[in-house]
Image (tube, rainbow, N blue to C red; front, side, top):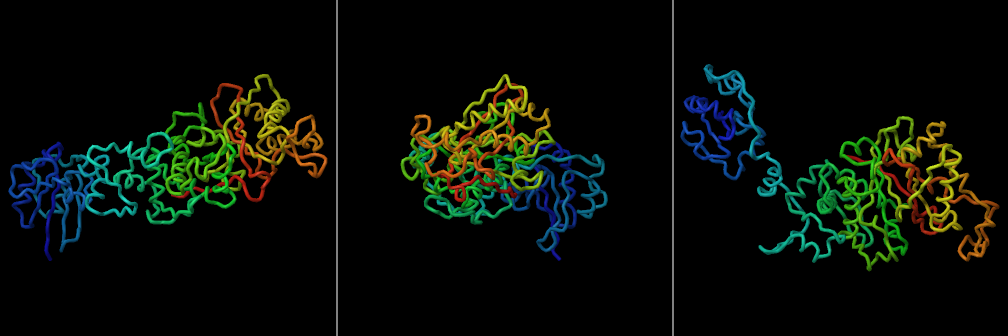
Length: 478
């Protein structure tokens, strides 16, 4: 059997320099030794034949995380490894009884150069251990990568992060899924999309790797037929995807469900929603003026993503209300057209607040249209407290809101009240709810603790196509 010892060290490590005499002792032993230095070809200076691992390939291949590291090989296969300086471990591994006499019994090492931030991904790309399938774009020496993205139409009008190989590899580390796994066919052109393509657009949007499982779930949710992503792109209405995140993952990745939850300032909120929009544009071909024919659109078509506030254990989260177990990580996608402010500073009872909310909710799309548009009600903490203190849970709030927004059909018919807009003359029944009972009104908790303000997000429903266009919820998998 061919035995060999390998040492990896660097001068910029106090422990590596402390045990410098050990390298000479190893060299004088019976087992052949190779010493690799990561940062200085003259270190250690007390042994001959030191190999300068200038490009860090050997350190990368050996999967070195800390220095000093001692490895024992038998017929080329690793049979033992000691990390940092632990005298007894090194003696056993080197089979030298008095190795390191006079040195401290143990001393922690330092991080290896090959695992410094960004270095692992760079080495993976450099040494061919990653297979990026996407076509590489060659830029000239003086080309500005951001301007190149603008020129090729890869942006939503804001700068994007250039998707270098290293950034793509780093993003892919955020999921256990294979880069070549097919996520689905992206509308409108129904182009095959892989996990890698999702990762590329997540990079461009500014996501961190830990956001990628959420982005993947968002993409998969958008491809559920009931969400009708193609129709949402084609409509001349205002709407774009609104993403609501539930579960522990929202807090784990630092999402904001509190102050300014629907606004700017939080990286996860901002970039997760943007990644979907960029993917639809760059992979599916959904661009404004092309398939996207929105008359006006809305700022949420850049990105619209926020988590629900689940801090009250008595509250039933949206994900649970939609059939998922408590604690599940989910995304819910809704066809939202913008935020309408709701003010009720004088309401002190749930009944009064409910009547006020109904007045604003009835105005979604048009006051005389019912079962036509969907809506999200984002309840702020102060408004929610009025319901909570009266013992109203989610089910009671939803039931009372549906009751309060149900109105006589005769008042909503076309021409009634001298207004041409309204429900068709053949609308059946004496009264009609504003929203479909099973999915037309989603109630979500979010926002800062000060201010008797809530938000209403109206939504597209495809014009009473209740069985075709619906909000969807998808569980997040790592």
